[in-house]
Image (cartoon, rainbow, N blue to C red):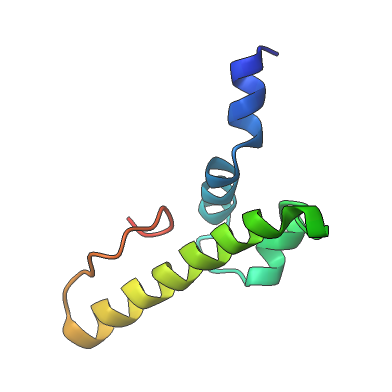
Amino acid sequence: MSNLEEKIEENIFLRAIEFGMRHPEGFTYMEIIKSLNLKEESNEWKKKIIGKYLHSAYLNARQTKLLEHNSNIETPFCW
């Protein structure tokens, strides 16, 4: 495996998107943290990234329901 392939494989954004695509029915914060093996304290910044994007995805879904139009909050979990 090349250095670039290793970097792509370890990219937290890509791993989170892949997890989300495998779970279209939904998932919890703890499920994604456990699946991505981010339980250790050394992964705090990665957990914050996941938490931020999940929060944004929730706000997008809520705003879409309430206002009947798509939100403009950017997150890789909403398409």
